[in-house]
Each structure stands twice: as C-alpha cells, then as structure tokens.
Image (cartoon, rainbow, N blue to C red):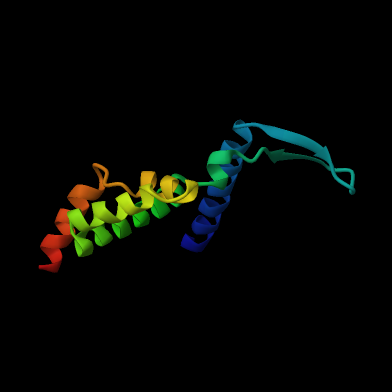
Length: 115
C-alpha cells in the first residue's frame, strides 16, 4: 500500500509543479502528432538563480579581503594607487579594487583567523 501511495504522491507533486509552471504563462503549440500541447514560458528567475549570481561576488570579496589581510591596509592602498596611475583599464580596476565596507570587516575576521 505504501508503494502505491508513494507513486500517487509523486504523480500529484508533478501535477502541482506543472500547474505552477503553467500558471506563470504558457504557449500553446500543435505537435506533429496533432496533439495540442501547453508549454510553460521560461522565466528568467528560473534560468538564473540568485545564489548563482551571489556566489561569484562573495568569492571575489573574500579573495579581496585575503589580499588586504596579507598585504596590510597600507600596502593594499599603495597598490591601488599604483593602479590609479595606469591606463584606463588599470583605473577601472582601481575603482573595483578599492577597500569597501564589505572588505574591511572580512579582512579583520581573516586576520583574526590567521593570527
């Protein structure tokens, strides 16, 4: 009995999932076999999740904080000043690499962990 119940629950979950997808919008198409099929419109939020976007930024902030920890704040600022004196690409890099409110506390935490 439990196997039949599990199979029913799985079919029920698939029906609910399909209903949620179709409730966000769908396109009706006529297949080669003559069957009319409703296909859900793919939403942007389904294609790209928020965590997939935030993970690279989080990694970059941690790496930047690690560099600040290793070089020290003064050494890091000197390196950013060297970038500011360079060409356009280096200047843009200096804008992104300057110490920000997220990097400072992360570097303090990393320095506490390292020492």
